[in-house]
Amino acid sequence: MAKLTYKERSNLPDSAFALPGRRFPINDPSHARDAKARASEALKKGWITKEEYDTINRKADKVLEDNVGTESFGVDLPKKASLWSQCVTSR
Image (cartoon, rainbow, N blue to C red; front, side, top):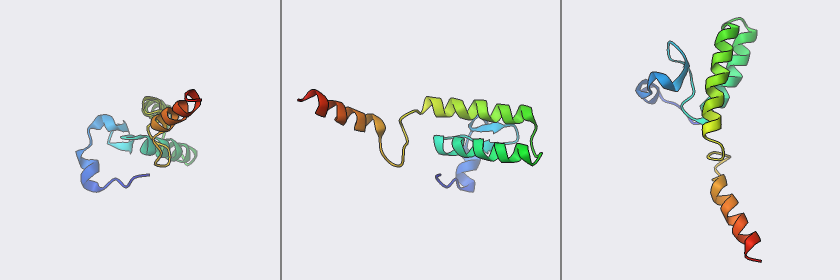
């Protein structure tokens, strides 16, 4: 997960957070996955309600859905898929 500095976090719009109070940043897929993990932990410890947990998961899932294939261990999947399809079709 990319480090989010205080300045970067401060510059994010409220819509980049899953809950009011600028809690659980979901500004990119990495942070969305982390928000889901932290939400599960927070729910088990009683720090958030089931409704808040559901909201975090719904919003994080939307970020992840909107970014499918754009982030995977530094590999740009669409380009990789494109190269693979070129190899297969060139035969």
